[in-house]
Image (cartoon, rainbow, N blue to C red):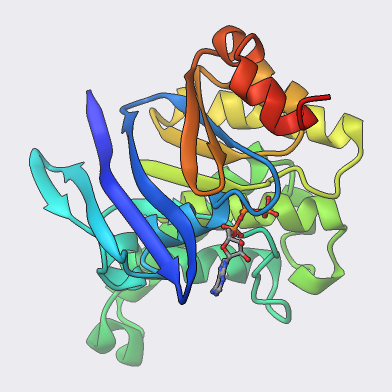
Length: 257
Ligand SMILES: Nc1ncnc2c1ncn2[C@@H]1O[C@H](COP(=O)(O)OP(=O)(O)OP(=O)(O)O)[C@@H](O)[C@H]1O
């Protein structure tokens, strides 16, 4: 079943067309890879899907609560509220806050107790606070971060910062999660562990995950379907096996060598 559909999507930056007439769809509960050479338009596509940019042309339709909503050009916060979450290529954490606080802030909208209970510290306030902490701890455990909950985010290792970013995105209880190079900068062992974890959470949380990743072994291992972008266009789409054997893809990556 289609969760998110993109129709004839185009994004121009002045004279440069970063996304050109792209059509694609993401289904419920699948893990999709988005690959392509540097500058192909992968991050721009994520930015269009999460409201960082508005489209120059085209439609982005997202299904939620049995309704289809056009989200192209909507504000980032409105899109997040609909159940669309993401991580960034450059890690964006609240660096001076603790690991637990980072997750709690991300959950704030969903579990916030409101002004009155918060100001007067009512039972509802303490109940909401406990709910947030329990839920945050549950997620942090899955990502093996439960022993560093009091650390400031900036003091975590690079790999743990990346994992915390994913926890923050999951804390918003999304139905679709966009991960922009989650394993970038990790060593092969860390990267392989994270890949398995992403696969696991996609199943356990009934999530749709779209993954931008340069490491082909990662993409080929876990993704059910793959879209390949080059110069802002979809040049191929299919199963890992089909993509591996696609001449256009081989050409795009190897430059016809
Ligand atoms: N805000 C912007 N203003 C102008 N040009 C931009 C902007 N954002 C992206 N571009 C251009 O759009 C094209 C696509 O960039 P994008 O970052 O989406 O590619 P990418 O596939 O994510 O690349 P990489 O794998 O290197 O991260 C590039 O030519 C880039 O320079």
